[in-house]
Length: 59
Image (cartoon, rainbow, N blue to C red; front, side, top):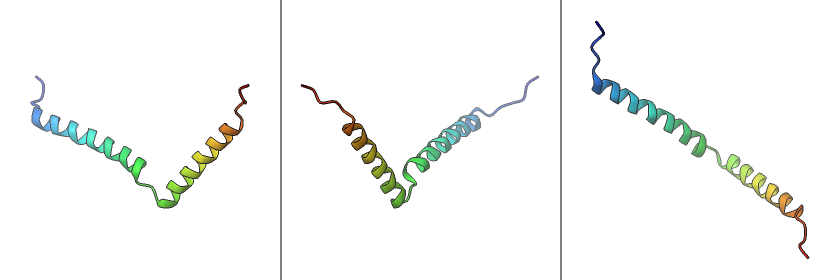
């Protein structure tokens, strides 16, 4: 016969797991220093300027 499983405990464990995954994603997204954020913004601006500079002029 199978083991007895407490469904409430399983449900809570599943919620804990999803919260841990979401917390990890938030740490990666928001847990950056001011310097890292500034560097990323500068890189994005540089990429935008590079892309805009390569556009063709329409007659």
